Image 1: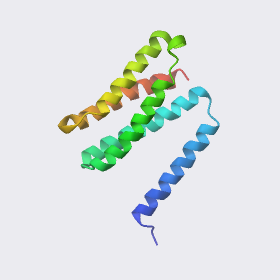
Image 2 (image 1 turned 30 degrees about the horizontal axis):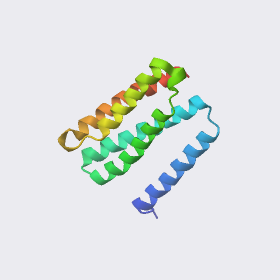
Image 3 (image 1 turned 90 degrees about the horizontal axis):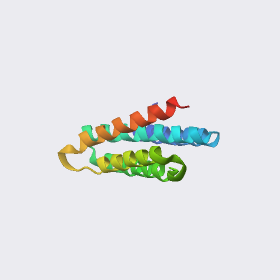
Length: 129
């Protein structure tokens, strides 16, 4: 017999949580940021899909997680040692948070714009590896 879809989704969510925890435990500081970017990208993709499907409740639930990750990325910046790069990244993270707060018909486009800028930063971070 097959499990009900809700039970399968719950099991998948638990597995994903365990996977992230295991990766975090052995990660370097650089690796921790990579994991955060990966999880943020997943959240933004989920938000975009939920918006396209008209599932506003799901979109808002995931939005809270994405905003929290963006805030974590920004608060982790070392503005004294990071100089202009830290300032620029801070502005990018704030812009992504602003975009995620967009309401109405422009919301879907704003989420996609936030995804694009985070993907660019994530790729650059992975490249410096």
